[in-house]
Length: 259
Ligand SMILES: [Zn+2]
Image (cartoon, rainbow, N blue to C red; front, side, top):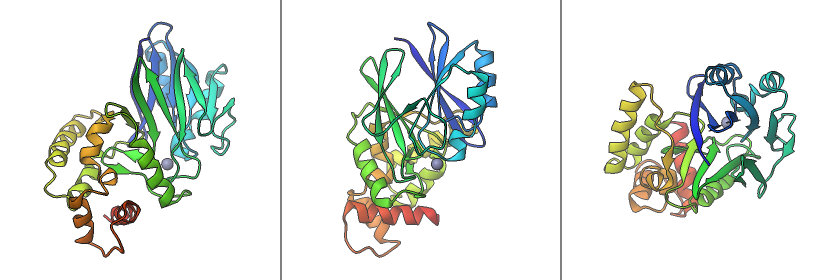
């Protein structure tokens, strides 16, 4: 199966991840916050939209859904019942979604919102995880309608995926997240290298994504809450009651809110 995965840019820093089947010229978009950039891309490349998947209800992820349904009436909309759209297939944790014979597992990765889903698509044994606003490269989403405990659990769960899993967050926040990470772990060489690379890519308008989970484990402080260097970095800034992963994770999220 040849599925190409392409980021359509929207707003300032959103990516609408697009699955493209080169054989039949069909496309699936994930989290279309805007319709026009999607329509422009599909028309330029002679593609037909057949499915929309959403991860959560925020406007910059669903804002283009209704217009795309009007423009492409045959489109199959996949969403959770709390995403605020008129879905054809209602999903929850454990659901399976299909992309031209490839299956995607749906995982509940709440915390940013209370009904945040991730899609883990398996193409010929390689996993591709569309994680919305739960995990960003070198960072994590803010807590809105979910809880910090849920977000911490979601990170633990995502961290169980295979090393080579490719992660596709919905925003380009990599460089600023790395600057925060380096404020916690100034001597982390993998982070220093990743920041130099992300700054060069961003200057050229090139996405820093996707990233492997193996890479994230080296550069994302929110996946590194049990590393002595991260615990020490947090303690140099705030007082925490214990070194538990959740305590460190919550302190990091709070520090990032004010970074
Ligand atoms: Zn969001």
